[in-house]
Each structure stands twice: as C-alpha cells, then as structure tokens.
Length: 162
Ligand SMILES: *[C@@H]1O[C@H](CO)[C@@H](O)[C@H](O)[C@H]1NC(C)=O
Ligand SMILES: *[C@@H]1O[C@H](CO)[C@@H](O)[C@H](O)[C@H]1NC(C)=O
Ligand SMILES: *[C@@H]1O[C@H](CO)[C@@H](O)[C@H](O)[C@H]1NC(C)=O
Image (cartoon, rainbow, N blue to C red; front, side):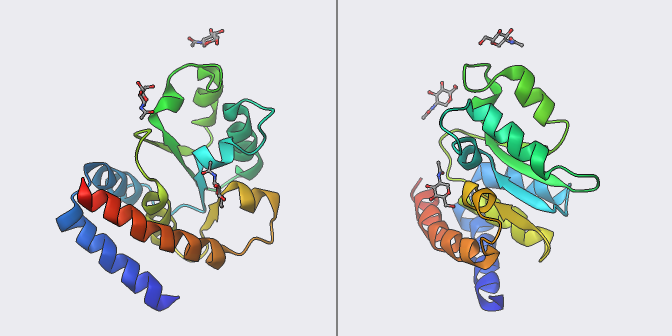
C-alpha cells in the first residue's frame, strides 16, 4: 500500500508538470485549502444509487446521512448539477452545500484522480464513498482504492493525450 501511494504521488507530480490538466490544478488548490476531509464522496456515482429517485435526492440523502457534527465532507460534483433541472433541483443542491464542501468539475472530466487525491491527502482516517460503500458498510477502503488506482492510470493517459 505504501508503495502504491508513493507511485501515485509520483504520477501526480508528473501530472503537475507534464499532464498540465488545468482543472486538476484547480482542484488541488481547492483541496489544499480545506484539508483534511473525513469523507470524500463521489457525487455523480452516489446520485445514481436509487433510480426511482431524483439524482439530487439520492445525493442529498447520502450527504445528510454522513454529515455529523465535526465531520468534514467533500463532494465531488459535476457542473451540470448547478443547472436547475428535473434531476438537480436548485433548492436541494443549495441546501447540500451547507453541509459539505462541493467541487463541481466539468461534466466531461474523469473524476477518479480527483477523488483519490483528496482521499489520500486527507490521511488514513479519510473514507472514500461510492454507492457500493453506502450499500455495504463493510466495503473495504483498500479495495476501492486499488480499483480506482487502476482506473487512474487510464485517466492519466486520457489526460495526457488531450
Ligand atoms: C459507481 O461506482 C461503482 C464502483 O464503486 C461502479 O461499479 C459504478 O459503475 C459507478 N457508477 C457510476 C455511475 O459512476
Ligand atoms: C455539459 O454541461 C453543459 C451544461 O449543462 C451542456 O451544455 C453540455 O452539453 C454538457 N456536455 C456534455 C459532454 O455532456
Ligand atoms: C427550479 O426548477 C423547478 C421546476 O423544475 C422550479 O419549480 C423551481 O422554482 C426552480 N428553482 C429555481 C431557483 O429556479
């Protein structure tokens, strides 16, 4: 695990100079100013949890459920969530923002690297939440990290080719 974190940090430091993903830089700044988080939430993923509900409702329920006193939540959202629509009601999106820090990425960007970065920078105690995690509390953090580590390599290539 320590090795893969080191490898990741290496990839991220390469990311700074070579990949030059502007949005990732903005996200890093955002995160560094607010560290540490206790829980990092994949907002888009969680919003698809229950298909019978509005996406914002699913996310709202997750944020409400996880938000406790002195718990610092980071939700990685997408910019399209800020446009009032049938799935993303403005009133609900605004209310969620009182309970968690939100970073709204472009709707097209890969967000795995963002989630990983915020989770790793926050330290060992920080939990990374997808809908799998919410469904099954026994979900193992290192498993989901490994999964996302693999996916990050793909993200890195996509980023590089831009
Ligand atoms: C949400 O994450 C799970 C794994 O944690 C993945 O299987 C699923 O495809 C993701 N869904 C979306 C919409 O990103
Ligand atoms: C991203 O969101 C904007 C605003 O809703 C929309 O105009 C655009 O088509 C979206 N792009 C993609 C690739 O979904
Ligand atoms: C958002 O859209 C809904 C209809 O979908 C409307 O009732 C509501 O007033 C709108 N809110 C804002 C702040 O525009």
